Length: 85
Picture (cartoon, rainbow, N blue to C red):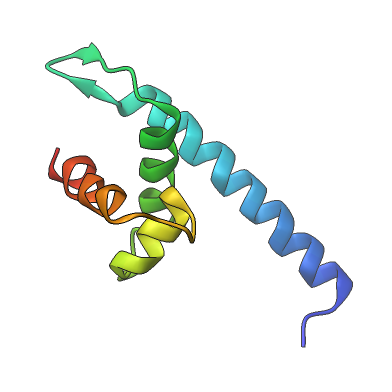
């Protein structure tokens, strides 16, 4: 069981990790040394993948995070486009 101090520490570490990942994304998203503009969804998906880099994610987890629970079939096709790059 985690006490309130432990929970606060975990929350702070999570906030710091997310801030760091967002900073890394802004710095590293380049192609041939030129900065690439990402849509909000692309940035959110990249952030999610970076935050879970040591985790095997299911297709459903990725789709749920990027497009929500009510994903239509045509939206499923977009995952391949985002991950292929």
